[in-house]
Image 1 (cartoon, helix red, strand yellow):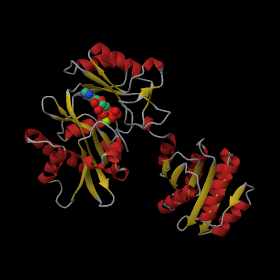
Image 2 (cartoon, helix red, strand yellow):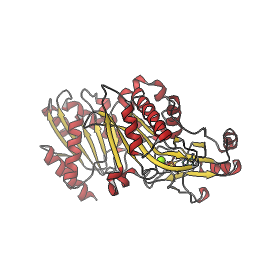
Image 3 (cartoon, protein in one colour):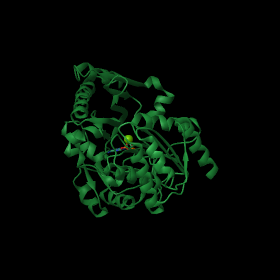
Image 4 (tube, protein in one colour):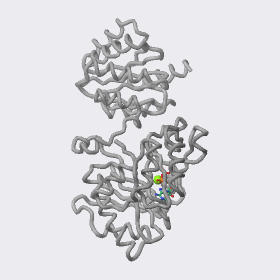
Length: 399
Ligand code: ADP
Ligand code: MG
């Protein structure tokens, strides 16, 4: 689960990390009052969307001006003008895709006098099963570009969970950022605060880009991106309360109601699969035969007919989907339940695209019989390889 920058900063503040004072704003009329609470004379008006690259983004609407989603205002009036221009309009950044995202919230923050911009993030390194730091003197820009062009400028290290965060980790961060004296001390403290926040809140990613040194020699987290481990959310009702579903994919929200593991992707072949491993393999093989999956979907082990119906409906409702591949290996999941779910969904919403079904395992004969007897225009497949080739071919013919 993702949250907004201002919410992430509130969490960082709880753990003592240095962030600027700021006020979230939902309506343009609140902007002036919000800015008045800040020290001034510079106010930064920041669009709150679940995507980065806001500073370099642009608005779709001419009324919002050509400029991006992070604007420096030199007066309270200007902050108000920016707020009016941004709210309700659509911001396009490298991370939103062409469609962009509507800006429904702003954060008005104290302007910082920036001396240097760094990059610092914490994430789970799956290879070592540890929380890892990624640190670079090249902040403010896309870390992917830095990794590509000057990988030697990125320092990474992992923290041993048995010892937890230690003073030497802080020194490592300070060295990587070439900080000495009091700033090195501040870096040590910040390293500990960020690690503690990360672990206590069960985060998956905490990215500070940029972490800055102000002209008066203070470290400050100027941007904050924070993602939480969904499997640990039950431990954090205070985090769940921060969820902003207007930022989430509608299909993913619908899927979460049925506890389906679903992630929307950009391709055109909808996949209904059971088991995460088989779902990954199915996506891979679709790519191998030259097409792209429209989603990851694991209907799970003991899915009911209702759950399968819901899953199939979510796939067919996606206008990007030009063909559907149902790939089920019945273990706990029964092939006949899948067949009934698919047929129930097609009865409700119709079927406009080619459908390839590959069933194997528990109750496979019954499942095939149900599909054959349904009168549905289904392309049957014998195995995973056959299924992938058939759906890719069918979509190419239809296109
Ligand atoms: P994004 O990463 O989405 O573009 P950031 O919060 O990183 O958004 O802001 C982009 C840039 O705007 C920063 O690199 C920084 O130069 C500037 N900026 C952001 N917040 C402030 C602030 N409070 N004071 C001064 N400059 C800021
Ligand atoms: Mg940033």
